[in-house]
Length: 378
Image 1: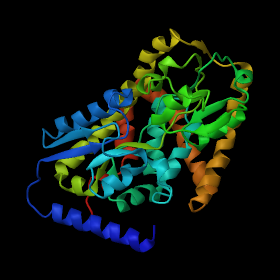
Image 2: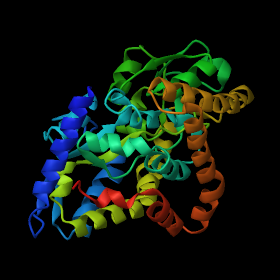
Image 3: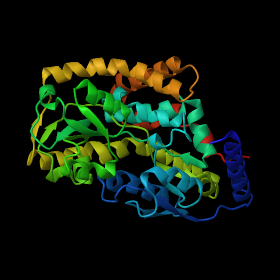
């Protein structure tokens, strides 16, 4: 994408917002929400859909949504341009698919190895994006949209089509992975990583293209894996980030009144903890008995557990290398800054949140989500 194209997009978005905010009263808006993920996926059913209904509640019905799930309108690689170009007003954006359009923001998909606890990772990925990466939000604005928050999953588990108990059982096996951090972990285990779209996990396992999938437990139900998974190693193996569950077009955002925009952002901060709790932690707990009925479970052997700290230590260097490749200034300092954010959320903030869940909302409101999110250009 040329600088001229970027400038034109930014000017067009500014013009849209200036026109939209010229009136004295905000219009009621029904927004289309596009997602390539099936509506029955647990993180949609327990996370995204309740979040959207919460927006309707806090705006007293002035903002409503019409959901278009399951790839009916947008596919995984087309959500970003579909929001930008007005095909849909909002959608589920996986940043990893757009390294040329979002060279900084897409690096948020490289943080899997830094997360162990989903609550801490939820806070950390948002601070990394909104505070630790000054260019990330600017890139999204240039693409004509506003991310309301970033997502963190439950810890990933190794789910295989045959019994597995430890590192020795995984040698040479092919494993479906979502991104490059997961691929590096697979290689550390002696496995062969195969990058696989989440919507293709089942067919990959059914056709023996892969032997395992490295995904959260609840995804076994969301993507129909319970019929093929026979062995699970549920030692925590990183937390996927880098997805924006609700990214709203600037056009739609600026048709919403300022008071409602602020209410939506307050709702986003207050929803982060219940979102990750219901959409991932509780969802994993619900799916676990179903998997235990059809598959053997293991916590991983000593060799596998010993491999994790070595892998995690190398992820700072891997992040710096990816940042350098994407043109991020001072990539080593960038990687150390992001790693520090994750440590802070796991070691300092998580105990406080466990003692008082309201601390999560306070931290996101006061130190993470910038006030500028509520503003429109001009």
